[in-house]
Each structure stands twice: as C-alpha cells, then as structure tokens.
Length: 341
Image (cartoon, rainbow, N blue to C red; front, side, top):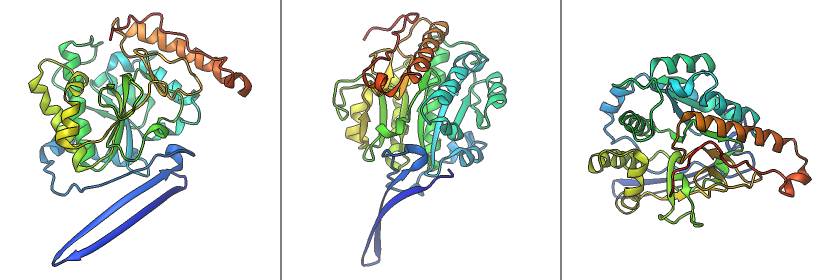
C-alpha cells in the first residue's frame, strides 16, 4: 500500500511423534489502514481443505480483480450498486464525495471493489472507478428496488455468496452499503479478537452483547475457516425463514453463529458508526453515517445524505476550539420516513 507496515508475530512449534502443530498469531498494524490506530489482521486456520469448486466457477473472473484491489494485509473494501444507485447524481456520487472530503480517508478508494448488479451500473462504474465487477444475476436489477421486494431480497442474498467466495480466497472484507457516508477511518473501531465486526441499528452499550441490533449494511469479516462456515451457515438459513432478507435472518441466527459455529461478533456503538435509526449528534466521534431505516425511497435518502454532507462541510471549517465545544451538529433526517424499532 506504499506505507510502512508494522507487524508483530509470535511463532511456536512443537513435535509429537510424526505430528507437528504450527500456531501462528499475527497482529499487524497498517499505517494506511489505521494511521495511529489499531487495525490488525488476526488469522487462524487454513483454507486448503475447503471445497470451493462451485464458488470458483461462479466467480472465476473475479480473482484477478481481488488481487489488484486488496490492501497490503489482504483486506478488501466492497460496496454494491445497481443503475438507480450508480447513475450520475445518485448515491455512488455522494459515496465518493464523502471519501474525498473526509479526514484522510481518500486512499481507501484504492482498495474499494464496486459490485454492479446490472450492465448499466457496471458501465457507469467503469467510467468513474478502476475496480468494478459485474455480478450477473437472473433478474433485471437496473431500477430502484423497494425494500423487501423480491428483487431486493434476491439482490442482497447474492452478495452473501460473493462475500463467502472472497473469504475463501483468503481475503478479509469490509462491506459498506452505498448509502453510507464515510468521514473518518472506521478500522480504528475494530478489535483484533473479533471474527466479525458489525454496525448496529440499535446499540445497547456493550459491544459484546449479542442482544444488540446488528445492521449488516456495514460489517467487517476476517478470513478463516470459521468465518467461511459462518457465511455458509448464514446463506443456508435463508430456506428456514422465507421470504426474508439477509439482515433479518442474521438477527435471527446470530446466537446460533456464536454457539454452533463459534464466531466472535463485536458490535460497534452508533456514536461511531452512525445511522438514522439511532441518530447521534456528536460530529467529533462519528466515522460513518448510514441512511438506514428510511422506508420511503431513494429520493429521500439522497436529500438527507446531501444535507449531512453540507453539515460535514461546515464542521470541517470550524476551528479546533469550536469543534471541542461541540459547536457542530448533524441535521436530523427530514425527508426519510423512519422505520420504527
């Protein structure tokens, strides 16, 4: 990634008869991914025994792109769009604008993979970004997909299969919905011990409490056998709760993922990963803002997110003293009709 990477490794090995066990715990901090903060890669388990033949056939043309877009520690940031979200003056333009006006986060665009769900979105993506991938799906996803429509549900589940494949290739990923504005480095709020770190619709105060309300529009997963099994388990659970989208089912099975699969899930406070569901006014702490819980369409999201961009522009013009006094505040969403808890 063109910056110094600090690493700390501890290697222990011992032999018993002809069996050798090798345990490698790697903690390393990337200057590009965390500046002075603590983003570490913690790998355990291998991938050599995983049967990925079918997945490789589905996504065979993706592997070269992953190699190009991955960061120094094999992390990929990814989002997804259809034409309604990717066309000029829509969500993708706002998404890019936030990276360019945020606090030293524009370099993350070098590691952003944009997944397009239709040919028009793919062509638009290629005109504005170097790393685009067209996920070919059976239906036409060019238009706006209403929340919980059949098209919307099929779209979000196709992402789970793709994310599983990325983990199988040995890459970590951070998935971000395109209706999320980035203002600061979110990796500084992720810990080394968690297999998965997720944003919340509603945060109860304890990042380890499974009763928090997760939002899988923004979540980070480290590649390991355990997390690959987590994605497989999650996708297979779709048949148990039809018809429903991936976030609702994740909510329903999150205890099973912890108890049966053994994953460690961390939930991030909404004062850092902000959202419309549980709105936070502290501009000094926010890293991202998600236009979730907005049930009245794309136009309302665009209006409210554009307003937040203006808030951020005004905030960045303040002096340090004014920021410390809490002069800057977000304007609450005015166009979005919010889904009740």
